Length: 199
Image 1 (spheres, rainbow, N blue to C red):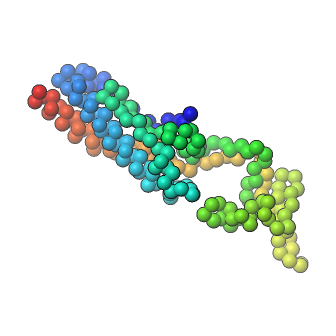
Image 2 (image 1 turned 45 degrees about the horizontal axis):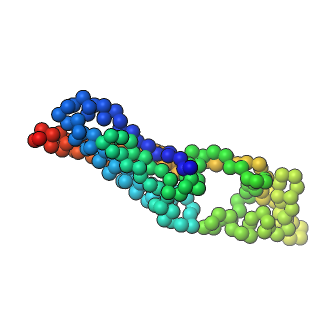
């Protein structure tokens, strides 16, 4: 099951609206509309920011994965989640960091291997290194020729590695939601008040 890791809760304003009998129906509707409009702006911002932070074969992946669970006048909470991907994504890990554990030992590069669009180039990966051998928890390669031949440490083998935070999903979401709500909520609430007074 996928995690809901981005949420913006405006339920406190619902309580306020309940005390304003003149607009008890209009204000929650206005706030839900502001939340939903802001959430879709936040979603677009996250999608636009994605290619610059993550190397992905499919540039449209995040647009497909992220969905918006809309707020209603009875539930002033809006959520962006990866439910569409069925929990198969690493979005939460990219947002929070954590620990990656492999089935065996993980080869961690230490020698500045060449990188391409899909990570370390094939010829520089442990199985493809020429004149390479394992000694304990390290992989060495023989480089150079003749009198200049030497051993170079290429990889260390570890049972797990720390995964850093790579994509500030929550920070971006909160910044965009705060900015958009500050612009949209007052305008829509004022419209709701005017509608209530006319009635």
